[in-house]
Image (cartoon, rainbow, N blue to C red; front, side, top):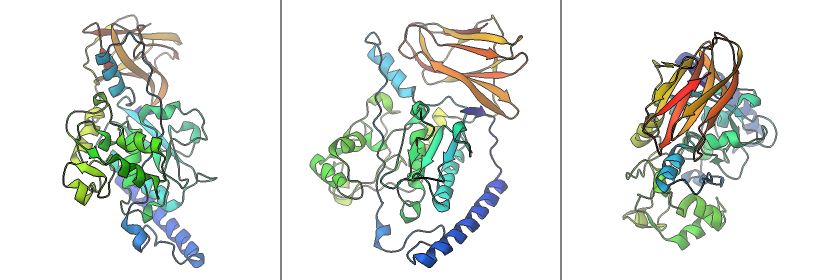
Length: 399
């Protein structure tokens, strides 16, 4: 399950040593395969020839129903809820697992490249941690490599995928043959962090030749039907789901588009649009805004039977330290006309382990967690504000 910082991130030397071992294993594996197939790419490289001149496909997000909210929820409150409800609480450690057997299995080269993609996000300096695990039952992120398309669920939607044998992310082609290198994997991880497609930003000003777009994506390599093309390209996101009016055509979350698909703005109709490789400055700023660095961590003490005020703006987060005086079932509850996400972790050495979580988005009743806590054990409660719709402040208490 999800853990929380303090993260046991490997040192640079550990990463270097692990990658060198992976490189050696990959070289042995590749040389063996080249004896059977001379067209096999060099270790860590991309295939030569004209196939490497264009991307091998685009991300096709699974269609997930939007959170249902009661009719009594105002549009302003709904916008704030839906802007944050797929984001993780900051400080979470996400565990990722690679399928290495069966139809979803990946080879060493592609697994290594996806590891590099996780490092790309981690190296920005954010409050989320990423830890690879060989135990699928511990993993929130389960990565497959089945050919046919790349995709990921968005943000906390990944924990709603019940089957432990089900993927939450798929890399659908050999990344060594993709001129974007690891960028496809970086893009999919961006979805897992809770970020949508940038070309669907309602403030982009993009005007599509819709017939041309449908024809383009109906052909290879994507072979999409009209519904999938609309969902992933033409559908404009609601303004509440994006940060603001700025559109970033170089975002890692932006598709590239061939000439003739975009009518406006110029010159994209003539030249097409090809984002720069790697994370843009806007990508870096946005992920730091939602997941700022957690160290040194400031924790607010929460004692039994004593309430504390929660004075947060929408999207902001506060972190609380609980040290129970007795081992028994406890109730942790919020009070006030607010929508909150609460996630409780148990401190276990240098990491904290998920215990329980929930939110009250769109509900009149406040978030309540009922859990068994141990005497003297330290717990961290992370609280993110979705919306304040009645009271200026809220309160927390546990007993």
